[in-house]
Length: 157
Image 1 (cartoon, one colour):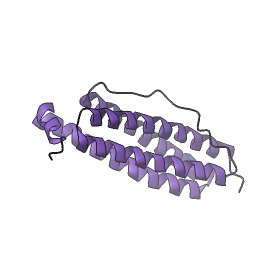
Image 2 (image 1 turned 180 degrees about the horizontal axis):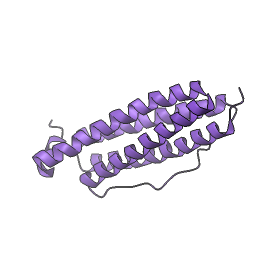
Image 3 (image 1 turned 90 degrees about the horizontal axis):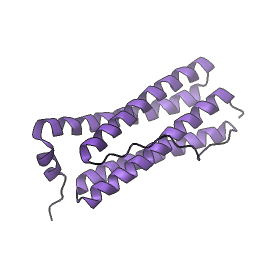
Image 4 (image 1 turned 30 degrees about the vertical axis):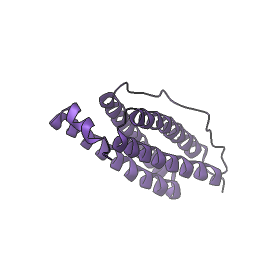
């Protein structure tokens, strides 16, 4: 089915965002693993996998609309030097994603592409879950202090 070029452009822009955040999350997850914060490592790694699934859905939709998925574009990756910076950078990435998905959903509605709109709405729900989890982690750091928070991220054998 030949899709609207504007929709394909929107999907490719969202794809660039997803591919960027996948890289950011993988680096953050591996940094946490290197610091032996295994619980945090697993949590961030799971989020990266969720983002990979989003990218897969976007690619599939671009192909369905007979477009060409652009997988070579990445935005600036924001790597945090410590866990607090990572959490804040990840929250910022999710905030940008939520804004982008909301705008894309509106554009798809205006273009009458309800199939793409539904796909984007499902991804938006995941992004909102992600930011909720990240903000909970930031709140925990604020309430208990970074040292106590990090000691909770170590898996005891």
